[in-house]
Image (cartoon, rainbow, N blue to C red; front, side):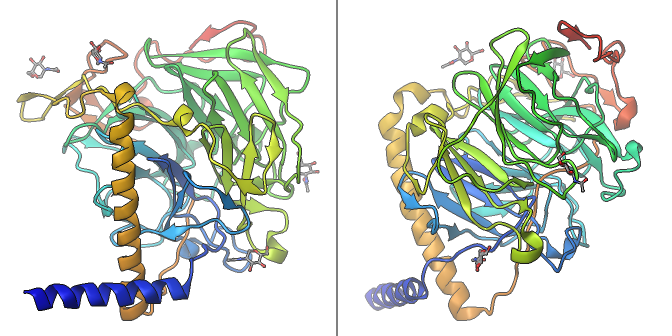
Length: 492
Ligand SMILES: *[C@@H]1O[C@H](CO)[C@@H](O)[C@H](O)[C@H]1NC(C)=O
Ligand SMILES: *[C@@H]1O[C@H](CO)[C@@H](O)[C@H](O)[C@H]1NC(C)=O
Ligand SMILES: *[C@@H]1O[C@H](CO)[C@@H](O)[C@H](O)[C@H]1NC(C)=O
Ligand SMILES: *[C@@H]1O[C@H](CO)[C@@H](O)[C@H](O)[C@H]1NC(C)=O
């Protein structure tokens, strides 16, 4: 027994050494990936790697997971990325990545385009605690189709994710056909063992490649494509109020309103502002401008923020997250890609001075650390049994500083151990050549039968026989607005 332990230790040390000699791994460039922060680590997953000049070549999709520790400083020219496991992870691009689960421990991938064979589930779930991929365990009645170019926002109060719109799977590359876009809005309850889906009032626009940002119970939809030739206006913001379960439209003014665009990214700030960055109108030139939308004024106010430092060239289809007061932008497409490939550099903007950084320094990470969910909803399984979702995470977020530090340390040690073992195993046993990349988004929610969750925000019972598709608009919920004449919030 002792021999066995020694032997194991020995092998582990050798593997560790080999791994360190090989050196830190650097992810190659990719676009239409998706990223999220869990426990002060940035996880970016999937996307599409450059393949000749064909941006639409889905064989370039990847299932790589890359992890960046945000608690330590690093030189942005060599971020200390470590690669996570991709075992059982799908090859996707144009998907979404959201935080979920009872402990904010899950990275939830939804939708995206895939090379064949298309996985049977549009969801893939990475558990950051067990470091394993699985498919989502849905109630059998909950089913939503694959899509791309959609958005997802996590409501950290109750571990739900709200998904909006995107392209249906049928013909991802054909934006000419407006019928392929959808306006579906639905919510997924991820805080319980068996997830359920609840269809919410469909949105007023059939849209893709927009952004959605959740701030104080309201989801703000900005930009995106309405069809091949029409982009969403930027002087009128669509808002879904989760508490009222209602769409509204609010004008946005300012001396400088951003150009219409798609493929940009947006994040919310702690003081109720939304920062948008990048995007494109035609995939020929790429925006490198930065705008802030103030949602505390009426109308909302746009400001064009002049940034300082070494101003990067524009990009689109990148990943952007807010880590404390730092904006972190990774990968994407840019104007030099035909010459130099997609951008592989990481950008860091200090939003207290709006200065592009050459060194990332952690700053006020607690500002963007979400609370543990307070799960109060009930689930009803299809067999009619009612089961109270156990409040498996009693909300202790405010007083759990030291607990979360310990958890972080355990996570880090576990993560490092896992990564070392994984890397070493790969190095020794495989000539690994699996590389694919992705993005974020996709398609179409069809059924949500009988099952059922009472939304704590809508306060109304779920419909029990949603048939999905674009016909599932509840009566009276979709009144088309005349956005040109709107000068006050319009209830939709
Ligand atoms: C990153 O891109 C630059 C040029 O844009 C290239 O020289 C470098 O090799 C790339 N690095 C990786 C790891 O792909
Ligand atoms: C692409 O869009 C940008 C910004 O709207 C514009 O300045 C540029 O002229 C466009 N290029 C082409 C080739 O259409
Ligand atoms: C669960 O289902 C039962 C029977 O169908 C129903 O009476 C009950 O109100 C439901 N509970 C919830 C929380 O939806
Ligand atoms: C959790 O939610 C319940 C029901 O909404 C509420 O009564 C309770 O105060 C919440 N707990 C915390 C810690 O926020």
